[in-house]
Image (cartoon, rainbow, N blue to C red):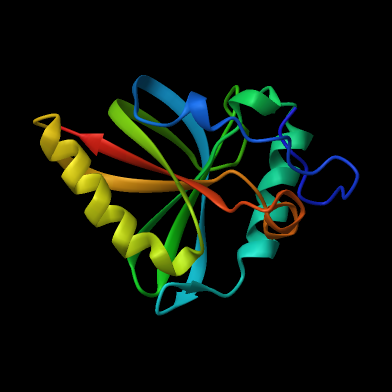
Length: 163
């Protein structure tokens, strides 16, 4: 079962950085439920309601991955819109499912959201050392804001899809 953003007693499990830091992942048609978040200059305006709606769709369809396999990726194609991807275990009727395929390199960072441009620069340098180049970036926060405060870390995993 995925972490439940509406359940304060369960919420986010302790985040294992070793699973994601400087790792390579090969995905072939990995299924994700996809939705959009309205933003103003990359600041999400309706993230909470979108996440709750997506999570409810996953629960209703019995498509929750194990909490250790749950991912909620964000991709910002513009300052006005973000795409949110939640991992699922199967197709969900009447839902927008996006299959992600390719090679993804992940690296863990810790800090506030506004540091994403710096993390992209650091990630680009890391990839360059490995003779790789990013095609697209997705970001995964290991904790919701409440749990980040509770645990004292705001872990963010950058997933670079590489050529």
